[in-house]
Amino acid sequence: MEIIKKYFQNITEVQAEQFTQLEPLYNDWNSKINVISRKDIQNLYEHHVLHSLGIAKIINFKPGTRVLDLGTGGGFPGIPLAIMFPETDFHLVDSIGKKVRVANEVSNAIGLKNTTFSHSRVEDIKDKYDFVVTRAVMPMIDLVKVARKNLSKEMHNGLPNGIIALKGGELNNEIATMRNICTVWELSDYFEEEYFTTKKVVLCGPKIG
Image (cartoon, rainbow, N blue to C red; front, side, top):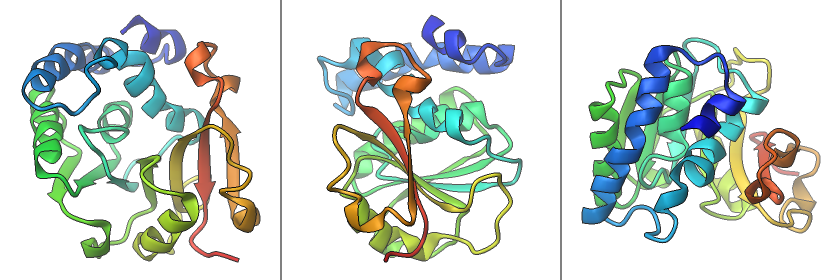
């Protein structure tokens, strides 16, 4: 939990308590339903919570912003972002029902009021959002193709509406055909831990080409 305070010093007492509750909750749920690698659960705050909050380093969602978390798994990046932005609405979606259940139960347990959940495939989501966020569920070109239909044309934030993905490794080939609609931030510019050396945040607009 201290690693969160290290990079987000202005969180409230309520937010700090919500972040603190994540560890026992995920440890408990992970013992029943494997939503985080058992080898990686000990790195919950660095590899999952702080990684999710990398998005909060590149955008400060305005109140009333609507965000779709696509392929949320056990609730990442949606739950950490929902804690950080309590006046932003997050809809967390995954095609695996038991993972959606874990995310929903964790959200309820820490008292989040700005999250909703759906056991769905992206193709079945028809609503419009300001942003779609995700953690490396598929190549960016495929992600943009399936999720751009969910982007609202009305913009309310400092960055244009788009798809925000947390990615790792070399991205040049993956976004080679989309350089005109994608912006990349290196998380190593914000977080000093070695884990973030190759981690990136990518924002891509709704059109290709």
